[in-house]
Length: 108
Image 1 (cartoon, rainbow, N blue to C red):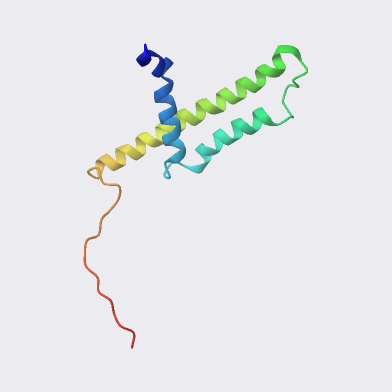
Image 2: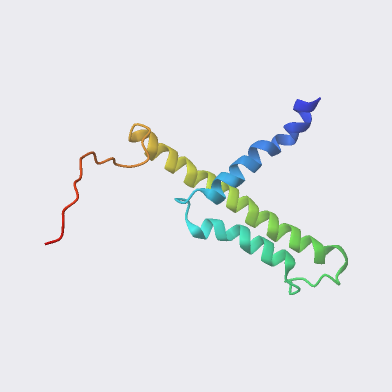
């Protein structure tokens, strides 16, 4: 029962992907901005269809926010796949490693 609640509709995996997209520094900023735009659109009082109109007024908020969240997840997942491929192609290393030694030089 607990396993079912934990994986309810795959939400656990979705939230994990969501967090990874947000915190991965190599995912482009414009993809992360889609999440901000979705929140701003829902919270701003100005709408494309006023909320006074019965169902359609609220529905446009839902449709625009859902579309922006879908784009965020879809494009973010694609960006993460490219990042993971490039890391795997380099043998699992995150970047080039330069090995060597150093020494302190006294000023003259």
